[in-house]
Image (cartoon, helix red, strand yellow):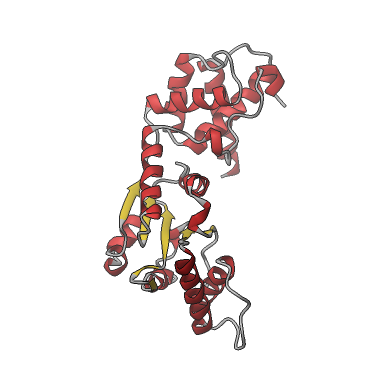
Length: 275
């Protein structure tokens, strides 16, 4: 819609963008490196926590792009609110287990299928990764205990797979109340919002990847963007994308503080009306 006007090759602030759009801010890159270490060292489990909108799910998805195919299946559970039985059935199917034999979909049958898959992975030198998103929601359902028991599965004396628990900051508190699971976590990573400098670099970096050859956002607008969004990438994406739409509509040459503040006020007003 606005790409030609701003002389961009693509939209720079799509919320699901990864690959070359992945933010190389020091905190995000460090988190990615830690996750790669956990998986490539074939550890049992890691935890990635942080406020809503800081890019946890995107980081977990980006992880799969950086892993070698020889590691095996990468399963991303994005809707974990299911029973223990259903979760085991889902994991067995996603990890490539053979069709179930009668009686189907019992806990015992699913565990046998999972163990068979993991033993085959071990024989072939593969190592599966299971990402459980929104894990902060699982404490009341009892699924955290199910996940802990899954970590008992081993092949050749080593963890049968790597589990990555991803959730909001409340996940850290849940771990403190579940010490037996916390002891299985090999690494904890806390993802925080961007600093002011990181916010500016994030915005400019995305624009450059999208093909920008000039400064579209004024320097003081970059500072204001951080103040308005708190350095949360999801909010930054929404604000900047709408600013480009509005700027295109009124034929602005650059996005300044007045224009950015106006867009932010509009978002706040609409949210207030919907409340």
